[in-house]
Length: 168
Image (cartoon, rainbow, N blue to C red; front, top):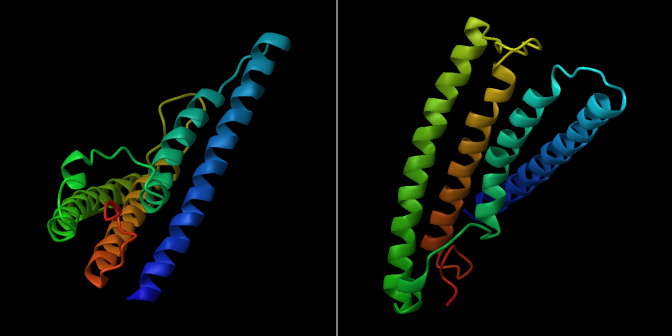
């Protein structure tokens, strides 16, 4: 179980790095787009769509890292006033709900991605990239987020104090 928790943590860190790279690529492309439009007076075709896809991918792929590092918004007023036993059960309930929701979204995202891939969907823009490429961030990001929630649940069962809301 500890090996699974460590492996998922390492993968979540890799996904965090990938999300940061997507965000950096979006920033570079925005700068290139501004230069092309306002300095060279050239039209831009693919940049806006690329930036949108990159930011969405960054959000989805970076979500497991955010859960791993407890970077998400957390309302813990009730947890602060609970004893460790009830706090652990409430944290477990929240992790189970989060896992269920993310696993369902990952499943449906995989179906959506497969449909785009198998039917050859392309964007309706002039650039017309295949939509399976940007849609791949749905099953990857949400699937990894589900695994990170599962690692949090295992950590709770193991009684390790560094789980989601265990720290007082």
